[in-house]
Image 1: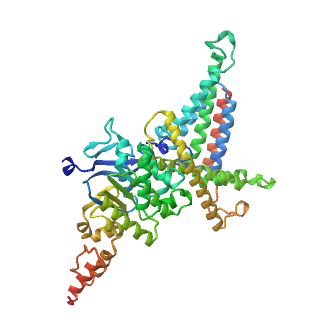
Image 2: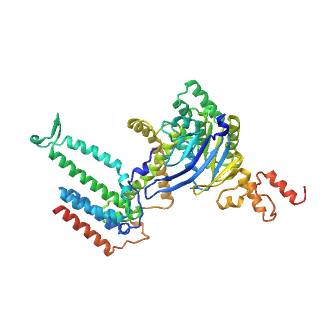
Length: 268
Length: 290
């Protein structure tokens, strides 16, 4: 059977109540931005080794089971390997030290190294953003983003609306996964075997789910917007917050640690 | 005569946990054993999250079985090489949300989906579509080309049931068939299901949080609570424990609920009152009128 919810982790929030969960969302988002920037500056294996050590620390502190994270990332890793494979083959390295060549396809030491660094970078980006979503509830994420980008509102950027759209999109991912599983089960019962056949036949069957998924998606969006109207939602500066965020020393210390760690990873 | 002794479907020590091995794991069914004989009419009742739908999914092998076994006509459905497609042609399921099992856009094509997938000739398929739609009170010429998304919820449920009927299944499993129907729609669907079960000699399984509807269709009741079988017996046996049913938040049939209320006045009033006539007779005896 299709078990998407077990195998796709994106957009899920797992509350373990850890120290990372309790951090101020603004600082978490800031730390993620710092790490994203650093991942583009780091360009050697040693640097990534240092950077990944921080990820190990975060992993332990978050209390989220590593097995859960890895299984939920299988699809992503498969896709990444697929892309890196072509990255290596088409990398225009130095012809003199090609390890293998066939027409325009080649494998060079440079190409391998470049692909490895690129792979590490993408894994790093993926881990950091996934961890942010796993450890931050949607409410916190929304509030954090709104406060960080709030000043842009003054120059006419519709920050609240953009954040709302972003958050709703993320929120719909698990709902859609559940819905797809339900549809797949019901259609299997009617004689479309989702649990049999090769990869291509399976993929074609998933196509059958698209129309009902789109229809229910639009219905859901329609319902949500009606619900928001009836409850007098109006975005932007009119909204007040029940919980005011206050930065603590821990938050500052965490951000300082991340910045320092990333600078070290970049400079080594 | 294998069928006389072998249950048509049997769950043996079946347990199931959703999202097993993740922080969101949810244990839905714990060690449920249940055997249903051919021709039985069984109601599976229980409050929400008691595991009814999981049991339904297990009947047609729609879950990855980890713990426990499911036997259809004595054969283990998880055995390698077992013909699951044949199992699903025999066990017809009408899910809680009819939309999820409607595959085509047009009523006729959707009802024809199962028979076509099973490889029946076009002539036979057409005959079955017509017969199934008519049986559900949806006249074939009028509904054949209607768009499913333009139908009402009740009509969609009928189309979903027609799609299962067209398969001529030996078992018909309905998950909350009355949910969201108005009183008239419920009466009609009840009458229809009773007729169908009689005419076609179906093994019928009805899941519901209410014994009211199920009591009119079924003669055996299995009560689920938190993923375990809490009670299993004939309708009357189970109704005798009306207090326990009420504590599990299961809606009682109206005469039974009435008898339970009146039990305060007449402590010797039986709990397993099924019909209004019975209730009336019991009351009249106690009032010394009859």
